[in-house]
Length: 465
Ligand SMILES: Cc1ncc(COP(=O)(O)O)c(C=O)c1O
Image (cartoon, rainbow, N blue to C red):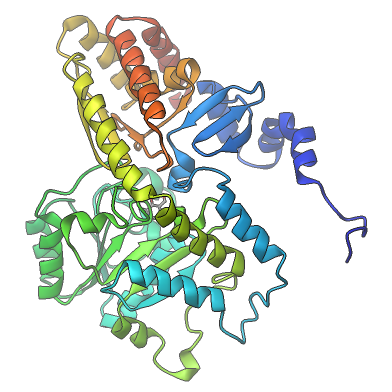
């Protein structure tokens, strides 16, 4: 088909002429509850443009995106180098997804990923984070001949059945059981509990996020090394889910580098996409790979039609290039350290602010029960209506008054999580610290945020009625 086939679509024009219909379209054809949520909390501003770490609404207002699509936009939105790489794929008439051939671009991306993680030898590509987790579970069972998978309380590894079976949050699991058998939950940061779980020698693998995304929970200094030792002792595979923490997020290429660990598998996705093309990767040892793909008639025993597609592979290759050329990981380390330090000093002034923690640009800001009587009463009212509601009193004014998009770090959590693009500037850091200072100060003055609290309580009561 040529350019004038009549089927050519100008997507920019399509978007522009229909973007005001988005909520109606979603209410009718997709997830109506999501539309209700956005309207209730006033996030229905209608974003029309994304560039770098900024989003722009219909009226041209600029927002700072501290959510980055759940960690996808490490390089920001629409990075010119990623876009150019993808355009070059589209213009090249490449022999994509032949299936009865092997992909050159996949070979190159695998080689470059392994150069960043030299203790591993092989890569398996998938289409998402959850698909990488599914592959890891299958590989672990095939390689060890054991069925058990150990995982952590509060863990999040995705929402497909295998990944959901390793989810430490009841809210996600409820209504979908039965899940995968032989999955065992152990508390995070508890080596004695892990020892007990692995000593049965029935665990094929222990799957863990080096820093837990839900709640932004950091490992104790000796935890991950201890995990590695226990896994070696009981011949259980050590699988690091770096889907969120990997590709520079924590100020190192992998978060595991902070603690000098060498897991048997490292899972990547999110940021590897360059923010454009879904992709997942399982980096692993040769002997594990060889147990799965052990004969010619098993050459396709695990895989997926679209994995290794040229656009995804090119996005991954370009992402690694940009990371190096623009010293993105170093920037994440520097701006993250600055943000954590400056936000932490706010805790001295505000009794509701309990702790600021994190590594690089994965930051948790935790609130908790105040000491003064007046604030205590309001806090308790919110908590009784819905656990974790207080954080909305911070995130909503951050969004409305200061144009900063953040998230609460999980169901019932008192922690606000920041996972911005790693290209954050000093000016952005100033913006964030000023905004948090202002909103938290207001919450201590019993200001406007508490009347918002009353509205949220009414919504919470109505929702549970
Ligand atoms: C640590 C971790 N693992 C796995 C996943 C699942 O990735 P996906 O949503 O691409 O399936 C996520 C997504 O948030 C994650 O944070």
